[in-house]
Structure formats: C-alpha cells, structure tokens
Length: 221
Image 1 (tube, helix red, strand yellow):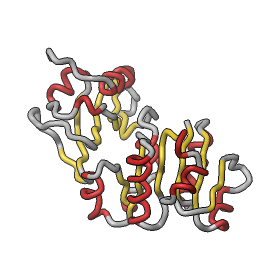
Image 2 (tube, rainbow, N blue to C red; image 1 turned 90 degrees about the vertical axis):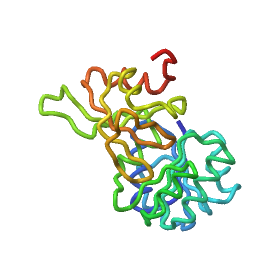
Image 3 (cartoon, helix red, strand yellow; image 1 turned 135 degrees about the horizontal axis):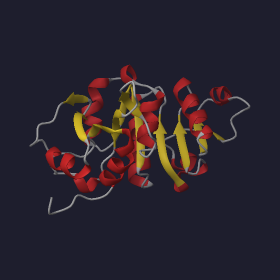
Image 4 (cartoon, helix red, strand yellow; image 1 turned 60 degrees about the vertical axis):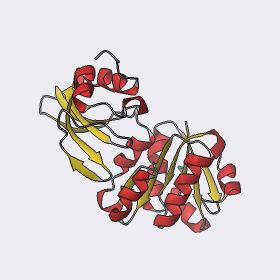
C-alpha cells in the first residue's frame, strides 16, 4: 500500500521507517528540505518539499493512489485540514491526525477524523489506525493464550449494541474509547462511528473476531 505522511519530525520519521520495513511505499511531505534529511540514506521512499494541504503537493506525493494518510506536522490546524482534504477530496479511507491539544479531540472525531493526542502518542497507535489489519495486542497473560487487543469494526456495525457485538464475534468488549474518553460499555451501549474497541479473547480466536467485525452483523442475531 502507498502511504503519504505529512511532517518529517521525530514522529513522521519513525512512521516512515516502520511502514517501509512493513513493505509499504512511502511519500513524506515537509516544507523544510532539511527536515527531510532526517529520513537518512536507508529511506527509499519519496521526499516531497511543499505544504501538505496543497493539492499539487499531495498529487506529487501520490495521494491519488494512496491507501492511507498521516498528518503529523507540528501544527494542529494544518494536520486536521490536511487530514480532511485527504479524506474528503481524495477519498482516503485510513486517515489519522496528530494533535497537541487533547481538548480538540472530540471536535475532530465528530468530523470523522481519528486523532492521536501528543500526550497519548505512540508510533503503534498511529500505525493501528493507518493499518487496521495490523496485529497489535494491548495486553496478554503470561501464557499468551488470552489477549486484549484493539479491533476495528466496519461502519455496518454502527447502531449495534455491544451485547450483540459480543454474541456475534465471540469476543468480550472490555473497554471502548469514544472522542478520546474511555468507558466500559454496558450490554445496551451502542457502537458509534469512530469508537475504538478493546476486546478480550483467546489468541487463537482473535483473527476470527477481527474478521467478523470487519464484516456486517447478522440481522437475526
């Protein structure tokens, strides 16, 4: 998959190398040519000098063939604008914006843009949102048999109760993050767009759980 990253600071550089190691093609955008030097000689992707909200710059970076876009510059406004352009103008499905002000997370989430606040940031969190199929565990018991993992649900599950999610997937929903705030769902709690689900299950069953949630719920269940 082709991934476009806006911002070549510490976060953007680490993301670029992590994604490259996973076999993806990468284009990194930054206004500062010197910033792009952080990528080093081991980076084989595309380096684009320009503004990440500029259409021509995005086209030069290959946005039209991209499957994911990460806005991780040092400006909240630039990141959210660029993320919206990627989502709304170019139809990029997997988009994430880094923000410095956690108080804005709810506003951005309502716009349909997943955000990662600096205080909660890890490279793994951003990679999960760019690559939902990427296996990543939040916790596992010493034997490795039981794990808690962040899982993605398709839009078809919106409006479905978490009780139904559990019954159909076979996973136990232990926590949900909504607009940057975590909570433990009740049986009647309803899955909403942009919810981040943390499910517990047997390690041997987690791929099946993910596959079920990536599809559509059964109407009879």
